[in-house]
Image 1 (spheres, rainbow, N blue to C red):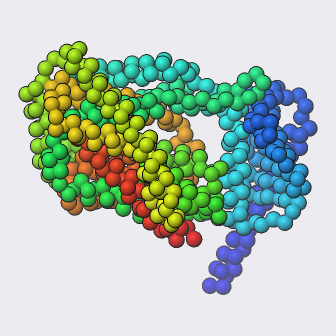
Image 2 (cartoon, rainbow, N blue to C red; image 1 turned 30 degrees about the vertical axis):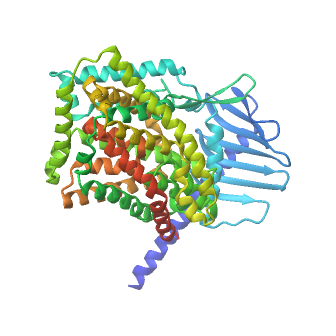
Image 3 (cartoon, rainbow, N blue to C red; image 1 turned 180 degrees about the horizontal axis):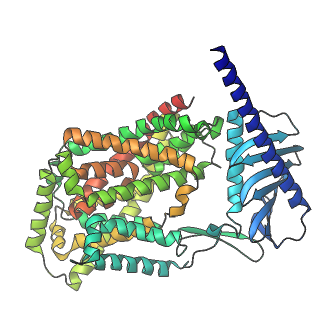
Length: 590
């Protein structure tokens, strides 16, 4: 036994020393690369970019050799200090960073291996704990990424092929036209394709492919001849979500049978709250799972603690943007790192929405497996369809103009009222002394929340008037057109290559969403809830008022209101649920 233990100690010691020698060798190679780069004078190209302004800003210099970037030198300044940062790269991967702060008279040298900070040397007192290095790694990589994305070496810094919103909108409409034309084919390849993949999913993914290919983009940057950086973005999503979405809700809700909606029963609420609980418990479980394989991914301390950043995801995935901002304020996450969390929010939520949309095409098979009772849903769909058939007519110009007046007149009033209500409740919420209570009700100062709520309320009131008869002229069909445009504008926000940009945080997000989905499926199976309740209950949490009506209307236009009502309810419980989730995440992270 003693020989076995002795042999184990010898092998362990050998491996440890061998591993240490390997690291020392790699560090020596990094130092040699730094010396070569510093002595190099015949650069193929040196670019210069200015950022900020005359008071707070700086200048970046990019050094190229053989079409690849070898070094980035940054000079930053503000009112009282000036500092320089040199980033050295090997095969366009960060290897060494030297930071020189003239005011503090500090010089910090950081060494990276395989994208990880492995050593840091300072001329001042330093702390070399795992948590400290993890925080430093996040800080340095975030600053480096900000400058690297402006270089020619990064294709994302280049503007897309099409930057004019008018042309982009035409391209999206051509894509939607192609989807509807091919999905109408009854024979051949396309009939088999759309039997598997829903048209709504293709309408979502095709613009994402355009963005990934560099044809279009939601945001981009340009650099002038003088080196000034200008930020650009498309307005199509804003237009779709602020104008077309509320107009679609109005047109789709005109023929709603409110009593029949309430007759859908308790299962809709159960599935909504199941989705909420899935987010609450999913966060801490995801941290536990990922910590087994990568402790540094869920580490951090103070404002840089990862659990603080994940709190903003909880706010977004239970409520919406207002709840997300509230969580950022409550837990004080480092706003320099906030962009990484927004990125995870967009990617994970969009991938999950894509999966939900695929499921819609297989909803009958899923309902059969769940042994779900779909009678109430089918009754509502049949009732609305029969009513539409009874009053159906070819729309006249008079019908079209009046429907446009009803839809966009309501949108106008909703925006008008939302501005006053958001301002009023902002003053009310500001006057609340208790910080936690104040943040619970921050969603009330969101103009988007009030705009969606007012549009839905007005549409429901109109459903009790003769305006309901415009369903016969195709009101819900025009609403569906607006919804598809919104779906396309959401799809163009996603660059599929970004899925691989931050695998650690993305892993947390995907594990988190898997737990949310698993709990929904389990409860749906137990109570025999239809897939409609599962899909809409999930999106009312994760997607909010922008995507829940999309998913609901994919089943039938008459069901869009169900998605809106649940999503609005999500705003109300979003911050409270996110706080509960964050408390659990903080416990497991520590």
